[in-house]
Length: 149
Image 1: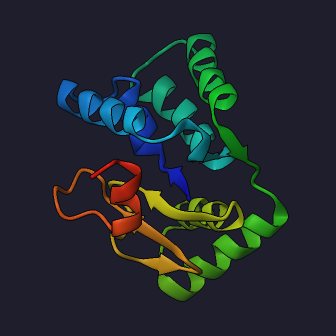
Image 2: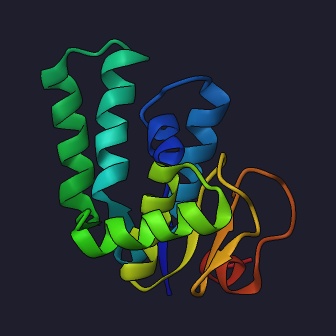
């Protein structure tokens, strides 16, 4: 089972926002099997923007951090097919267009879950369920099994 991560998970893991969020994101990523994590090109682009704008990192330093994510995990390109499906999701379900593209990339990559703190938890698109891993509720059985819970 494959899992896609949204930008906020990576941003928190890079120390954006609070120490508590950093610890929670780092623990989450550490518990997931690395070979099952998928990142979209859209997420990596957003991460670069967050690191340079919000964290005010020099672009070269942000580039190195993003490159580490790219070489550690599988990256799904933002292809024409991903864009088309993302725009379909946005049009049908009123999701923000770039969030919908991230969900479409997870779908195209064969993911079962998209972990995100700020998308619509519980929303399902073509077999991909959006889950807020920080909500403190019960995780879906398949995801809980990945965590050994």
